[in-house]
Length: 216
Image 1 (cartoon, rainbow, N blue to C red):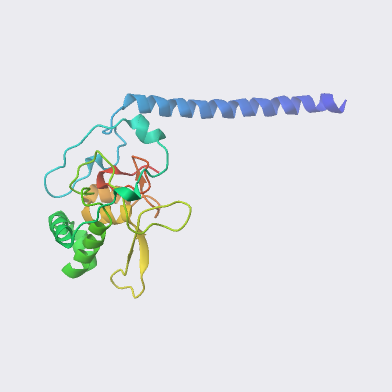
Image 2: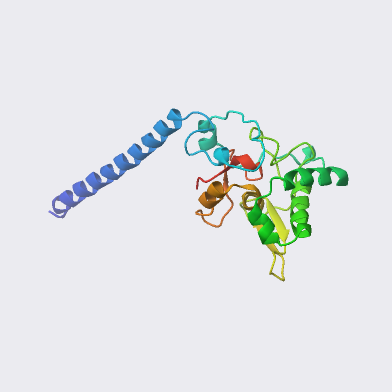
């Protein structure tokens, strides 16, 4: 009798579970359809593919959204591949970058010396043959500077922000949009949680400006 009394409840539970499974399957199917519908990097939710920075637009290369959505969250960086810039190369790189700096960054850092220091640290953290801002959006630009100490390794930059007296750590892929992104792209990114931005390549140590995406 006890078993018979429990049967209706059990059937209701199974029905509810089946309904939940169908909801999940439909959501997954919708995501697959969207992925196949926009097979290139310029699909409609593509990150800063539409980003605006002063100056000519770097050449774009096509990347499949299937890779972007389902890639492995691990870095392909090879430490042995790092070739540091000379002091002269750093100066040339920062001079070229400075032409594309947004006014918000100039206002925030107050002095040209502070802005130049930040740009210098960024240039020193990338290999001499890679350029996060002027190199286009095809290949990853890996970071060889400081990284976060926790399990989720991310590219970081240590700095004393204007108005602060102590050093703080910030994520490189948040610094780059702050300095270089156009207003529309920057406002879109600022709606996200204060965490490292997602990179469409899936590489946590990639700092290619054009790989930053507003996806969560």
